[in-house]
Image (cartoon, rainbow, N blue to C red; front, side, top):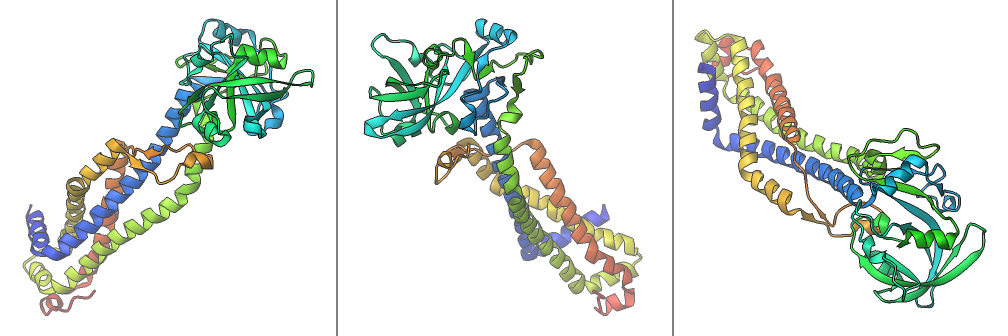
Amino acid sequence: MMLFNIAIKNLFGAKLRTSLNVFVTSVSLFLVIFVSGMYDGMRKHAKNITIETEIAGGTYWHPEYDPMDPRTFEYSHSVMPTKIKRLIDQKYAFGVLVSQASIYPNGRIMPAIMKGITPGQTIVNIPTDVLEQDDDITIPVLIGSEMAKNSNLKIGDSFTIRWLDADRTYDADEGTIVHIMETENFKLDQGHIWIPLSKAQSMLALENQATYVTYAKGLDVIQDTGDWIHHDVDYMIRDMEALIKADEPGAQVMYSILLALAAMGIFNAQILSIFRRGKEIGTLMALGMTRSRVVALFTLEGALNALLASAMALILFGPILFYFGENGIPLPIDYAEMGILVAKKLVPVYSLSLIISTMVLISIIVLIVSYIPSRKISRMKPTDALRGKAAV
């Protein structure tokens, strides 16, 4: 208790030095939590958007299907396995038929990925109900806002669609834009046109066939799917995870710099304290305080610095963290154009484990840098300390 009272007195006695150390440490604590929260927010957003708009509970792919290689589309389709087809019949899943196509908007030619999808599905957040067959429209087409911008198309516009069917014969017909959707998942937008599944099967002469099947959340994985391959949520967001992982070394460098600044401030403060408080240390040792208790006193002061920094971070920067956690951070550019699934407004996520682990890490670093200069005290003689000769 005596050591605690002395440490409190020393800290509040050195007002400016203590304030600067506590402020630098609290800034480091805030920035580490803030940047880590942004990375967690990106992961959560990518995962949520992918689940809501693309995979729901998971997907089953044809073994030849590779969404990054359009050359596989011609061969990556077949009649769905019996158990998967049963899910579709029960409306717990829907199939998608993928093929290459060319569109001719306003006299231009553009390559496109044509996907047939069940109009009445409610498993993913795509407005496919607009694709319900209309006798006045030959091929109803749903596109995203970026695709509409790039092709200069709007609702009601008609254009020619050309495709290669199963007999390797080129055919063409007229498509009409029935809806332009807003989606944050660029993989459903850029270069894509969506048409009714039955229409796509008829156009391609691939009756009852599909490229992949998406099923609802909460369903068990089907084991007997023939050669079709199951992919879960983690697999579907692997590209985003890889992107974040590639950027982590840069973030770790910044963390190290912030932690080094905080550690340097505490270390210098402790060195200065030992140098300027030599007579105080000598008096305490002459009065019977052991060297170990003197070391403990300085280490305790460092620990209190970390505690005060945590309190300051909560008071000064807590409202800032809360504001960005609620309202998000508007990003200056649209990363969807770069092929990155990042929200236009990034919302950091601060987990309790993140906050606690960051505070513990910084507290440990502060304790270490407080203890190191304090070891010098054990080499001091009380007589030298009383004369102000601190052996530091």
